[in-house]
Length: 229
Length: 79
Image (cartoon, rainbow over all chains, first blue to last red):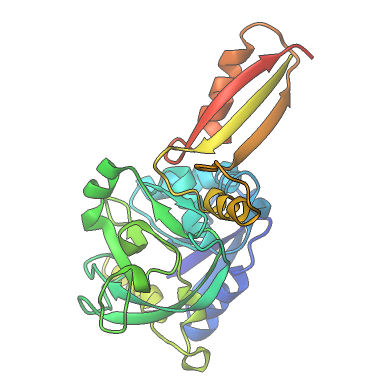
């Protein structure tokens, strides 16, 4: 699998993504610059975390206008795998590649800690290595992570929810919702299933030394799905 | 011509900042504050005169406001 990791001005998780893909998983991975207009033959694209364009106006609002995003949009509409992590998720929302929007955390704090998540879908190219309902651990690190959408949209996207914030036994409730996301949504795909956005950081939970290896299964799922494509 | 654009969260969405500021005003002893909503104020200096409102409307829809979560109000003033 050849993966392109897009670097926007202010991205800061790009090197971690490249490290996991290349050094941990032995994949071919290249960095793509926001000014690029081609994806250089990549089989999958990662929009990494960070603070693209200083989070000016709204998180992801300016990055989605970058030249590379035209190519990413075309790639996604052709069924290409696009993974947006944290700020990358916010960019996908602003681009309209995923439905909904992100607001500031209800507690107004930047939250940087591990959370537990329940895997809601195991039939997507990003989650096929998980077990249904599996409870996993990944870290979050964000100030704007409160997912929201219009009521009608929320009803429509139920089958697209890939991860929900949960308690240690998989229970969903306010006590386990770190940022006030509607219905505890931590990550979701588009209707076709080839675009995933999530607030937690799989690239920071891909090695035992970092406290969790659960995030690696997202990248391994992508590899698995492309191997059979 | 100058455009003043006021962007606020849609009614019904929890405005965590506004709620916190309301709490702070309460703590300072200000009475009669029912609610506080926080937004953005954007001032745009325009070169043209006529049809500016339409242009600013388009700016709001395409970039300045996110229609999923925000509403906007435009005021045009002679500069």
